[in-house]
Image (cartoon, rainbow, N blue to C red):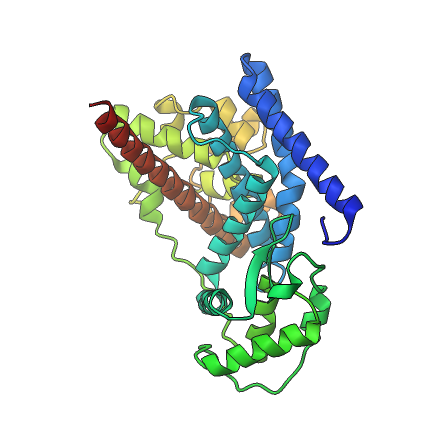
Length: 362
């Protein structure tokens, strides 16, 4: 990790960025399918520790281990999708792969915190606005893409360790809604003065949230099962097959435990079993479903007649409680909704670009 004033570590970060960009160039130039897949795997291997380090740091406070693993997987799935798109359309190139990976990880973290902790997100937005418009303070990016805040004269210097800012203590009025802007402005100045250097922005948010006793209760999102099963109740034919194929592609990006909790309990609006739609529509074979479940085909065949399985039965397979199975399935559905939303945004953007290109040709 780069720290200002540490040339050896800075050179190391630059070298890692150069290696990543070289891999990206090799991937874009590759023609054989085997080479393409090998290079994709290598790029993801390079990306995973970068993503995990950023996510572990950004979610170290309010979020739990389930969020951490989910955000890491979601970021890598987004990166894979972006790389495959880039291979087919190089009109929006990635000029700094390592920087792009870091940006994706931070964006995924902020999206998760925005969903789970709306009060904290409001405080974060307020602090961002305050620092952007302050005459002496500002925000900037470090070489490893961390968001740092502090005095304008501190740009480029070592940020203070998080422990220094977290040790700050002062009387503060309880403000669960974070609406006392005068108090927040005072706390920002005092914390930065105490640190004696720049501070990572999310550390500042955490410290102020703690001082004012900000409500940081986790918001559990609704399951909205109908969103997941609507594909299964659609009319048969090409539209159904295309919808299921997209769903199956997204499911394979889930963690193994999430796939098991979801697939073995997959139901339609009337609680009927719908996993069999996958082989019936040639979306996935029995072998592919068994591989996604990390179980032998023979074992899946034994369970097939009892589908959909209860949470207790699935829990016995996973070594988890029924409540944990329910949580895994909820997390899986949330990730599927996010992937579908991202795909929809990409399609809209591509449609708009196509219309602009068509207009320019005419």
